[in-house]
Length: 235
Image (cartoon, rainbow, N blue to C red; front, side, top):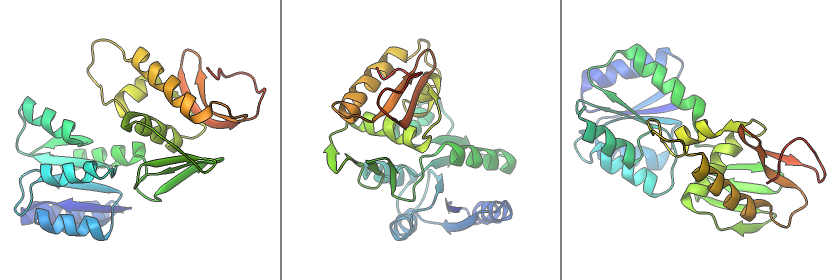
C-alpha cells in the first residue's frame, strides 16, 4: 500500500520512511507543502501522514484542499500543537486522526493500520453493487444509470456501507466513522435513522431489488436482496 509522508524535519521524515517501509508499505516523502500537493496530484496514496507546520503550504491548507475536492484518502495529522482547540480544528478540517509530537513510532504505525482498516478505499475510484455505482473521485452516485441526488452526508453514509457490503454496520459505528462523534453524551440513533430513511427513498423507492436494509436493534446492511426475502426489515 502506498503512503505519502509530508514532514519538513529531515530526521523525522527519514525515520518515518524507514520504519513504514520496513512495515511493508511503499513510502513517498515530501518536505514542503507545495511538493506534497504536486505529489498528490500525480498519484493519490492510500494514506497521508501529514505534518501541520510546513513551508510552501501548511498541513491545514493541504487537508482542506483534499476534502474540498471530495478526496477521502485517510489523513493522520502530526503536530506539536496539542491544545484542545487545535485538535478540534484539525478534525473539523477533515483529519481522520491526530497524533501529537513527540510520539512513539509503534503508536503511529498502529494508528496507520487502524485508519487503513476502516477507510473507504481511495482506489479504485468506483465501487458497485448490482446496478448501483459510486464514484469516490466525483462523489456521484448512479443506480441503473440514473443519477441520484445525495447530500454530502448521505454520500458518506452510503460510501461507508458499500465498503462493508454484506456486513451489518451498527449505529454506534456509523456515529463514530461517518458522523465522527466519539464523545457525544446522547446517542445519534434518531439522526442516523432519519438519514437512512432519506437515503433508502432515493436508493430503493420504486425498485424491486432493495439494497439498503435495516437490521432491527442493530444497524444497517447494504446488499442485494430479491423481492419477498425475509429476515431483514426494508423499512
